[in-house]
Length: 147
Figure 1: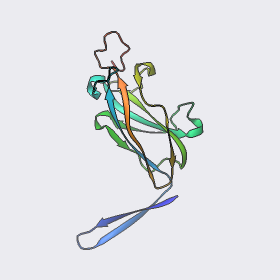
Figure 2: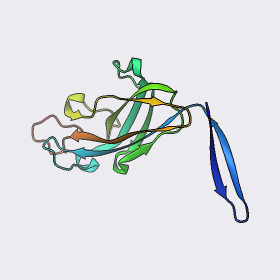
Figure 3: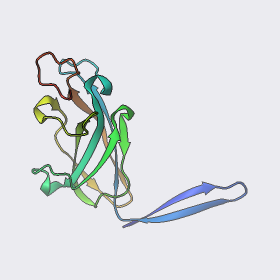
Figure 4: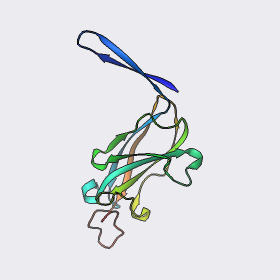
């Protein structure tokens, strides 16, 4: 549990506000590439959102989201609230198709393996830039990420 304090500048006086937080937060960014390594875009890959999942480190083999946040793919970054339980935590991302909002076949895209971070109340952990390798809509006989 931590106390997060923010300062606000008023017209004549400054004031501050403190909020009691019980969890940590995470920030991340991503970029898309084709399987050939060329730049890719969310629209050409037909990826509408990127979901960030997390679970306690001991549960990461199951890869079941115990918590998650979804971000617009075109934003290329995201931030969670201070909602993640403190402790060793596994984080991973999943693309969501723009028309169905479902995770495509895992064989049709690549993302980094789960990343372990130690989460502390009131603190932000960073996952840095993550790479999503996905096919475009014109995947020519290859397994399309999103159709």
